[in-house]
Amino acid sequence: MKKIVKWFLLAQLLDLLTTLVGILYFGAQEGNPIMIRFGLVGLIAFKLIAMIIVADILLIRFRQAGRLGIKVAIFLTVFSFLAPTWNTFVIILTLITGNGVI
Image (cartoon, rainbow, N blue to C red; front, side, top):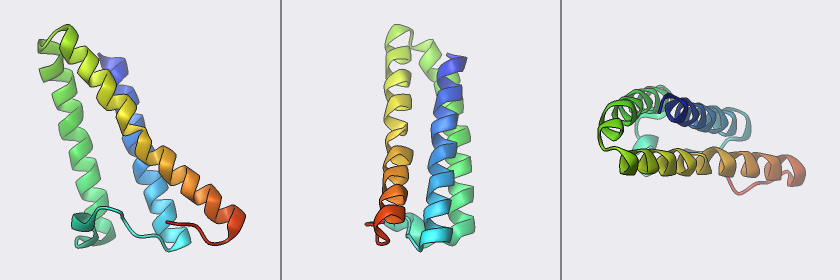
C-alpha cells in the first residue's frame, strides 16, 4: 500500500508542477473555478493539504477495507495521473504551436 501512496503523491506533485508551469510561463489559468478565487498561494496550499489528507486516507482507511480498498486505491492513483498528463500535453502543444488551449 505504501507504493500506491508514493505513486499517488508523485501524480499529485506532477499535477502541481505542471499547473504552476502552465500558469507562470504560459499564462494559463487553473481549470477548477473554485480554486481560481484563492490565487496562486491558495492553490498551492489547497493542493498540498489535499495531498496529505488523501494520502492519509489511502494508508489508513483503504488498508482496512482489504482487497477492495487496495483496488480502489490503485484506481484513484491511476486516475490522478490524468491531470498531469493533460497538463503536459497542453504545455507541449503550446510550445509547438505557440498558442495552446490551456
